[in-house]
Figure 1 (cartoon, helix red, strand yellow):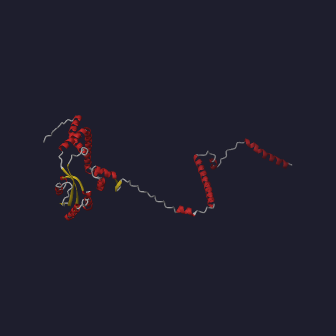
Figure 2 (tube, helix red, strand yellow):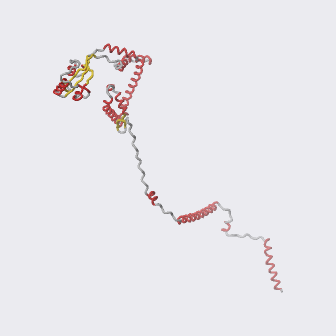
Figure 3 (cartoon, helix red, strand yellow):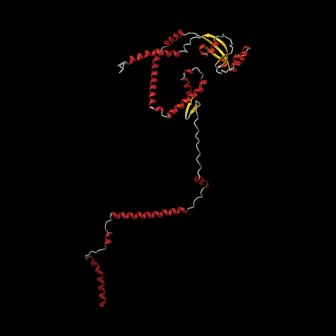
Length: 350
């Protein structure tokens, strides 16, 4: 009995002991340093470390996913390639050459000097600038004038290549020529205003009054190489052959169709020819006449006295004469208008 009592008492004490421990103040327990550090607040370096760790984990997971997807796509069956398409890809067709059509040359271009063009109008202008050719048919002088225009273009291009237009002396000459042209143009305008139709008529009357008439003959001829040919031709003409037909057939002078020479005065012909023809009468045939050109058979068609040229035909020359007469008067008026004062009329010989 005693034994059981002791056991119960022992058990009761063992149970009540924890209830009393709530009132007991326990001494602080010292933990290891590593466990104490984890309870401290998270620092900046720690945050960076966590972020770095998370980034590494994300990259590793992303690489695994990418590799898985790539292997999946590689495992899928591929379509059979088109051989014709492959030829187009690996052997592309050469691009077609673009043919550039040359620019058509305009119809008015009559010659090319390199890339420079010479037009029909340029040749016409060149001929028109030569007064002596105004009465000559254009088609007759065209070939020679075209050659001159081409030669001028060649010289012009060569001078440009050598830099001649930029040479100081050439520039000076150009300035002088330009000043002269401008001066002449200005004076021409002043004189045109000053010259009247009456001035021209008065000058023409002076020329008519001073005109001296001369004997004038219209004739035709057949030019032959030998005296024998000339005599045989004369016999044919005397027998009734047509003069114009024989001239076109036999004459060496191809510039005189039908042998026609037109009207001329004695001083217009070479002496041997003039002496013979001005002794003949209208309608008469000459014996063979020898000159430096050969043997001539001549027939006189008409004789008359020369007449003064018409006013219209002389108008340009009359205008030029009037300008020469009016020029001193025009310059005097310009001096008065500009108030010219000569401060040193002479210089000493020192």
